[in-house]
Amino acid sequence: MTSRTQQLVDTLTARIQDGVIRPGERLPTEADLVQTYRVSRTVVREAIARLKAAGLIDTQHGRGSFVLARPSTTGFDPAPAATRQELLDLLDFRIGVEVEAAGLAAARRGRPALARLREALDDFAAAADHPSAAVRADFQFHLRIAQATGNRYFADLLASLGPSMIIVPRERLHPDRPDFARIVAEHDTIYATIERQDAEAARAAVRVHLSNSRARLLAP
Image (cartoon, rainbow, N blue to C red; front, side, top):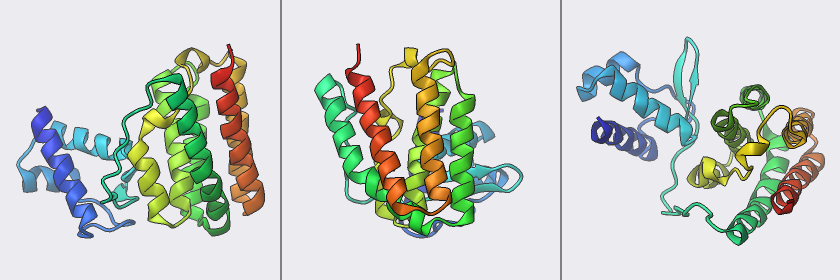
C-alpha cells in the first residue's frame, strides 16, 4: 500500500513539475485516477492527502483538488531542525524569508488567496487541544501567505520545509494556555494587514510573530 501510494504521489508531483497540470488547474477526479493508474480509492485518497500536506494542492469541497504550487527542482531538502540552536537558526531564516513574503502577499493577494488564508486562520483557531491539527493549520497559514505572493519560489521554499518548520511545543497548543491565544491573535493581525493590503504593516506583523516565536522557544 505504502509503495503504491508513494508511486502515485511521485507521478502526480512529476506531472505538476513538468507543467502538465499547472497551478490553478484541477487534478483528475478520484475515479479518473483510480482508472488511469489502476490503484484503489484508498491509495488515491492517501496520495491526495500527502500532496495537500506538502502544500502542492488544495481540496475544495464539491469542486475537487486544485494545484497550488509547482515543486522546486533545486533539490533543497533540509533536514528537520533537531537541536535548540538549529530551531533558533530556522526561525532566523524564516524571518528573512517570510517578512518579505508577507509584504508581497499584501500587495498582490487576490480574493481566492485571501479566502484560503482565512480558512487556514480559522482552522488553526479551531484546532485548540489538537496539536497535530494545529501544527498542520499553522503551516498552511504560513504557506498560503507565500502562495499569495504569486511568486512560486516563496511557496516552493516553504513547501520544502514542510510542517516541521512550525516550532511550538505541543503542550503549549492548548486552549487554556496563553501561548495559544497569543499565536491566534498574532495570526489575526497578520491576516488583517494582508486583507487591507498594507504591505509594510504585514511585514511588521510577521516579524513580530516570528520574533515572538523565538522568544517563546527561549522561555522556560
